[in-house]
Image 1 (tube, rainbow, N blue to C red):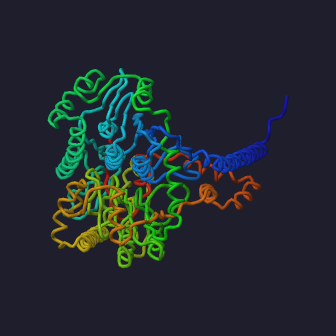
Image 2: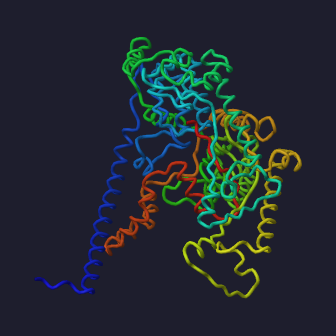
Image 3: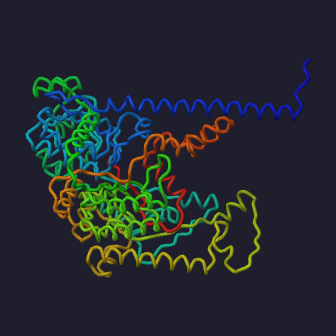
Length: 608
């Protein structure tokens, strides 16, 4: 019988095993990264395609995501090839005058994450294509509500015989955490300006139901979006808005047979039947994926305009507003990155105007102030136009308010001019639930006054209240200056209240309704130029930089770590970034990591 290993030998063997596993996992991860980099070269050639005559451009809603098309490591790690909304709409508009493109085949795979602003921009581009005289044919095994809003403009609208049309009106459901926090022994302290009753982001921690103000603003903005959607659908389908609302109320268009009977769709058929129609009725010999055509079109435009000296800077500000600069593949509006992009665009003599594409629910107040100041500096030298996407609210609106012109979709969610701060008190959780106690020693009365282990001291609470009140006044003052109105006029429509683009135009927060295409034309007009090329900011990082930041070290340093058997630590901390996060996951992660004053809205309108 073998003698068992001593404790020391067991520990040594375990440590050796950990080292070996670390080295192996590090080597495997590095090999995977190298393979990805190598694959990008072959992928780049496949991204473009030879566009043959009689081609139908295939637009799959589930393959359009975000404003900017992912590149480099983000592209290789994504689930399938996706196209950013900007490139997608640009390609669709270009296809209208491309003799090689006979029509568009629109598909709704039911997995689209596009919100109403993006859907409206996409629908406008498809309408532009259809107005050129070319057909749009739509098909789905089941239409999401947002997908149907887009597809309703098609010349022929087809549905699977066993499919459904999710047409039931808009609703909002907010989850509240107060009762859960009470059970855990956690008290969330909410600090916001007394007048900001509509600034409801922190209420999910302090209430277990909607406040009257929040219920009012949500009802107003979803009604506005629904009105825009039903009016567009009614015009395309030759139906009355009242009829559409009746269908939604009774769910009388939900099932396939009902959808055809009520006029929501034209035909019930299978996809091979639709492809037969494309080929026989519309002479569509080839199907061309949107991502390939968009890449080809972008390359062709770049070659055509390579000799054009005048440029318009297109600066993307998409995601939660945070301080600092971007690292790895996190998607957010980093204050330092946007400030740098605005400065570079202003100093670039070839750039004659700037279009700031804002798609953000807001976030850090300090980052918002920095970006707003940078916009103010840029507008002194060049025209600055804002194009709002799905969201341009709170901090997203503050950075927009100083532009020469603000363009928004009628379904954009904007406004939310206000600020709040939250600080949890987990003292009861620590003492009663976990049995943990603390004691303190301090030199001054408030040395321990800002802690999560006890309620804010009266002095600390007064300081925080003054802080949010002061920032609110600054915020309203900025908007009043940018929009050419008095403080009182802006305050009356601010107070944290959310508006749609359509309503915001009526109260002076937005200048005109439209998409990025309109914003670019306004920028060109104000700059006095006709022919121009687009220069995108912030500059995209190359694949090696993305990999280096993903690992948390430069590649050369990682090779040294690999030799020491410690790269596995990098792998464990980095692997959570490998899979792009959903918008909900991004928002939850943002809330968990946010600090300081926040200027943001608590919800996102997804067209389910």
